[in-house]
Image 1 (spheres, helix red, strand yellow):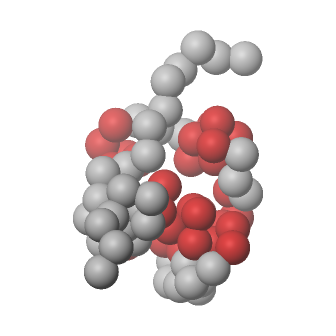
Image 2: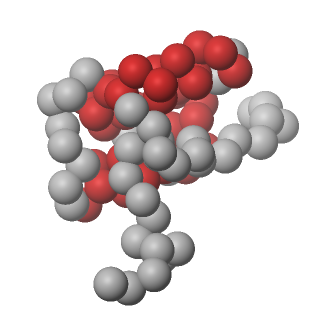
Image 3: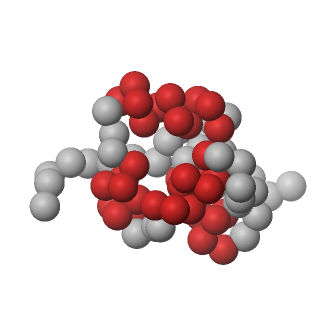
Length: 77
């Protein structure tokens, strides 16, 4: 087990910038997914545009990737 500390990506991100973030920072997406308890396939599907992150696990993953704002930190409209 590694002692790496992972953080959610800063919002807002595009699909391209989220992919680049992992490469630029040398972050292994599988390790990052395990750290947050999410499925690595959901990350790949979101970054390839196969999922929209509308609800459930896909939404949680989209928030962590910075593709969607965190509803817990956004003011109610």
